[in-house]
Length: 205
Length: 155
Image 1 (cartoon, helix red, strand yellow):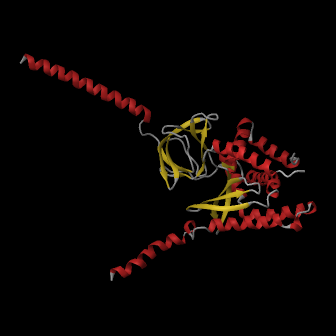
Image 2: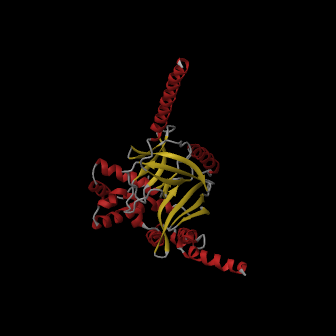
Image 3: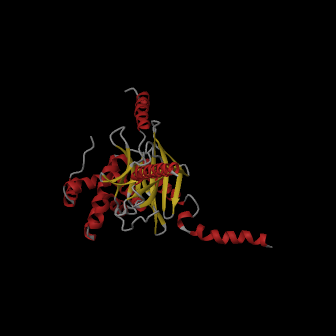
């Protein structure tokens, strides 16, 4: 009699664990990120959007796809680090905007040069509302590098707040750069530099 | 009677010596540990290559703690660090294993985060950055050069 009860009892105990987002069916964060990356790759490979005249349209589409998955507010907040807490809501808002502009300028060209890469999803680690998704990128030249996404679970979705390439965290990289400017000069100086960069787009070679 | 009195004196001397030695040993031993002040947090890394017990934990170049243990947890390196009691780490603080110079001593660098949540004693530093493997990088540079040369199309 007792033995028949064991299974339902164990199921009942485990049920709440299954239902929490963190452990919900292993692979959900990977699936969500994969679908975003796949969508971006479709746009990148689309021959109709290849010509230079379509660059703007293509970039707009990419932006829409990536903005849905990447949590730029969280990224900006983490990149600014301890200084974030000292800023007013208005300053924070402006910083997030400047920061997303910075990312767009820094990575748009790089992302647009991709297309023939193979992406393998090699693992995922869950920790409550946080996930670490590891992938490997194989370039057409045969090079290979690791690309990890750190994501957190917000309003029913996994959203990326850090990208780690070859063990270098983008957030940590920006955090130390921003902190250096702030401690050498001031927060105002940092904002001024970010604005200058926005006004004069960097030329690539 | 006389004989046994000398014995007692010698005994006291030896005992005193042993106590002194013991005290010295404890003092020297404890000096390394700095008592048990502060609190412990842990962090998981993909690799902590070169990190040793007792290596410093730094924030902005200032030592705020030390590595207390290194162990393996689920194929990852788990280190526990003891931090000074007045040090507060935000939940999104990032711990990274760094080296002084290219081949210098390793240490754990913590960059403070923006979160309002503080990591509680016994808690976990979730965000970590493992040291890039220098040999790996060199291999990649060399390997990358070779492949790109061999694949270069003749103009």
